[in-house]
Length: 115
Image (cartoon, rainbow, N blue to C red; front, side):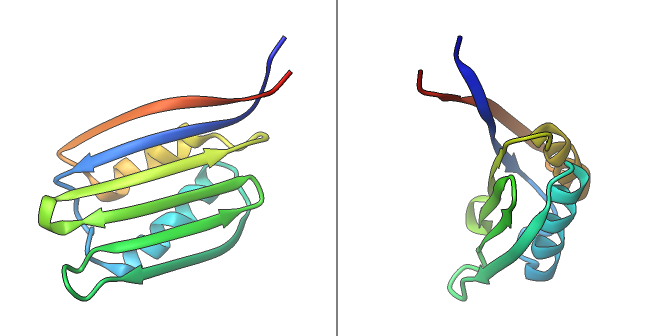
């Protein structure tokens, strides 16, 4: 029987608040991870001067949460990958409450250990 070793949640936000605020995004990565029951090891983010887009990652003991924003397209992409007892759905719920997107879509990929 295959073993699920991690859950990888991909989320897209359109029309979200705070997508050009570096400090808010750093805070959100940390808080979403903690809300999901994950252990934050490090948060790193970078703001691009040409369009105010931001890329960042929270490195977790349970894997990671990454973010990329494209303000010129009013779009933020999240990648929430967690293993163990951490719940990526709780992280996504927190991120939706914080960023308040007009539209949010997501898909879950279960990472299966090879037999």
